[in-house]
Length: 237
Image 1 (cartoon, helix red, strand yellow):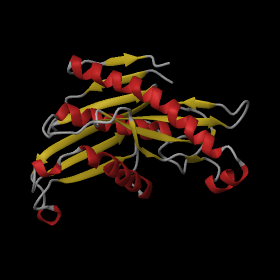
Image 2 (cartoon, rainbow, N blue to C red):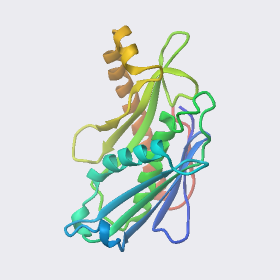
Image 3 (tube, one colour):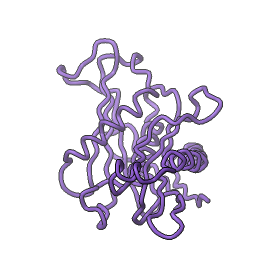
């Protein structure tokens, strides 16, 4: 896995912001809230949570909106929304990485999605303006489409299968809980599942490989929080 980079930004007019990267795959996230919510989105008994995902260039399209919805669903369970009713928590995620040339139709690679989740978590922790139940860390895993077809962390090139795995730390369980994954084949999930009888085994192995790496990401986040605003760069095996 490429080196993990964490840097807390000091953006104006937001309550928390942070940049997270796996090598040159980097993301900037910012959070505002609790702030005043527009009447149409107001909820009487809890806070409203909005997530926006922005690509490096252009305006958010269907893929950005779909990913924003997934990240919102992923992060929502760690909030205690009833603590801040009739208010808004607004998360903005900005990709700082170009779309992969090998797959221009896919703006967000698994590694970029993992970086988005981690950057979001850092911004939320930096804001410190609302209670959280735990910390979610994410890592990407892929299966090489050539050679020995082994599973690799944080894949950069073309893979036959791949996806992002997110784990909840500090949620009260004895082991990190898998709370979300978008594992799939890069060349047609259904077709590969029909051909590859080891698909389930690949998923299990990928999950455990991601779990070990997510622990390292969690350690990096804890170190960054302890340093309060400094930059952390860690080589993760």
